[in-house]
Length: 263
Ligand SMILES: NC(=O)c1ccc[n+]([C@@H]2O[C@H](COP(=O)([O-])OP(=O)(O)OC[C@H]3O[C@@H](n4cnc5c(N)ncnc54)[C@H](O)[C@@H]3O)[C@@H](O)[C@H]2O)c1
Image: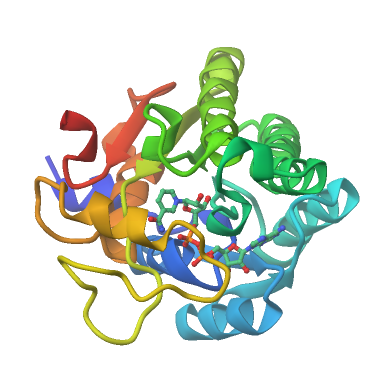
């Protein structure tokens, strides 16, 4: 038994949306370190380019809420890198669309859902089409959140992540006969601002326009593992779901959350 082969992604091609910053960078790094060629897409093309350059991958400018652009970006992945074996739907937005329900405008609701839900659907649909046609199976990993299971960021975001979870289960059932495993990965609070070490207690310095900053500080103080997640923590869990380690795993909701959902 060669355990190293269980996480070997040599010869595989992955596409990570929102791969230019935050959690996406941890996922890109983990998959590339395991041998995958990685297409890194993002609305932030400079971020995507920096990550793709770091791992020897391919950068694509993509807004996942644009259906035609999604179709083109996934086809570009096949055309440039040779196939599409692992699709990671990570792009998402949150804090700026939160707040008390009566303050959430139609535009806030529709904008977040167009990215967090429509974007995941568009990427799943095109990835399934490509993977089914190729006939080699595949992996689809949808980045949900602990907020798919427990409220926290507000109705707009929490609802969107619950939708992502059920989209995942439904597609796991539909695509299993084609050897395509579909799973949701749920990060807990993960420090994505870079720079200094993340705070463990007290006030989190609010960035402009982040209405839930003090709530975030309260959350961290109740994490059983006692620290923020790092993007590479989520990358390691994504590697599990992308690799032969999880050949018999489909339709799950995998928290990588420092124990957040235990309480
Ligand atoms: N950080 C956390 O604590 C946390 C917890 C649970 C779930 N998540 C989820 O993890 C994913 C990544 O979040 P993050 O914390 O790294 O955020 P982030 O803001 O650091 O990174 C998100 C990336 O997505 C990109 N993006 C935004 N809108 C896009 C669009 N329309 N099309 C393509 N790319 C777009 C951004 O440019 C950015 O590079 C999201 O789905 C988020 O909901 C994050």
